[in-house]
Image (cartoon, rainbow, N blue to C red; front, side, top):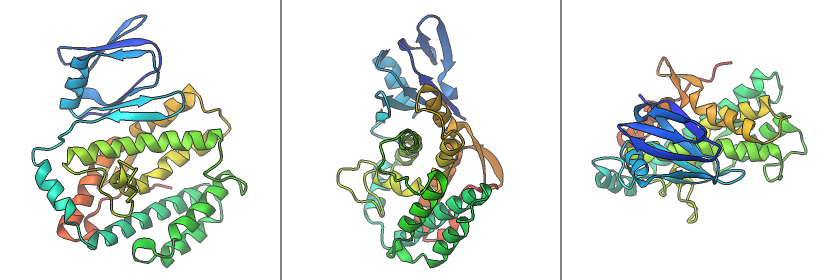
Length: 288
């Protein structure tokens, strides 16, 4: 099972030979492709051969390209599953039961946010639990938005907003993009389109469905940023954020890497939609 996230931060040439990624710079390093889940190119001085790109796409290895601050784009294969057309036809016909699915996902997100505040002994966690109790179908009363304001102000101060141009937001956005990319990979691998979301319907967002499904996992990034929130957003911080995929969480009674937990969770969401049973969703357990 793939688990490794490879980050390239310096000038290098990346190529392929005999099932191995070969990284050439001051020295030569070899990594077997079977170990790699994601490769992040966090420099504009690296080059990749088309042969390597083709091999990684065929093995569903995510390739993320960064600019100086944030992930800028990714390379994904056209077809992630043998029955992609069938899955897309189903996706197009999704009905209002998906509103129940999405509402349950947002409920879990707010619960995880509350649990994180509770872990930090911040009293406002109870307010978030109250918002969960007030949640209605498709969050028509915007409990998610109210919870987010209380949550981020509790973590980073009352003057903090998610629109600020600051290292905290740079770090949050970088970490969220790493998660989003992993969700893109899993959704495509199951044969679905990332563009067609449930709640998210932005015509300029190519990852509406990923944005819907990733919500409960966001506090995993928030925790890393909070624990390092006095640090500058630099290469060291990026490494810590990328490593979120290698953290372990408990899901379906077993400890799994976050990257594998996302795969389990995404499959369960699609199963819940197909069978119209929200209880089939497998969420990871937030451990206090």
